[in-house]
Every structure is written in C-alpha cells, then in structure tokens.
Amino acid sequence: MQSLENIVVEHLQTLRPYLQEDEGDIEFVKYEDETSVLEVRFLGNCKTCPLSVMTLRAGIERYLLSRIPEIRRVESVQ
Image 1: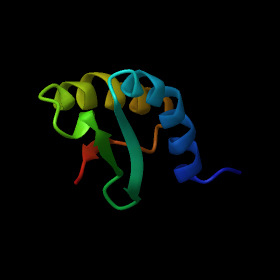
Image 2: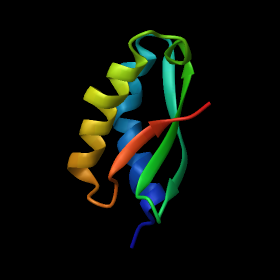
Image 3: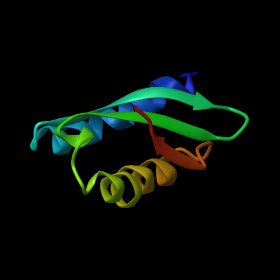
C-alpha cells in the first residue's frame, strides 16, 4: 500500500505542468495526521503571484480533496 505522501506527490505531478507553464511549481511539504491538513510550497513565479490563493483553493485544494479523502484542507507555507 502506498503512503499518503506518495499518493499526494503523484497527484501533484499531474498538476505541476500547469504551474510550470507560467514558470511556477509546487512541492509537498508535509501532512498532519491530527488535523488532516496538507502543507505545500509554491515555487518560482507561484510564490509571488497574486492569484496563488485562488490557484490553491479553486484548483489544487479542490482537485486533491476530491481524490484523497484523508485530506481536509490544503495550506501553502513558505
């Protein structure tokens, strides 16, 4: 059985090309079992993009929550 981290990383690999089109990227940071919160880090242009919150909530979080039931929320960290 795959670890949750591996599952998340696989799904992020699906999303990365869309971010890389604009010279950005995303990486897995950690998953908190107690709170069911996934932490990711934006890289490249995504770090300073004013639309990164919308990308996180409407794109990445929505995508991951629909595919990984253990996750309750996705947060971006520095």
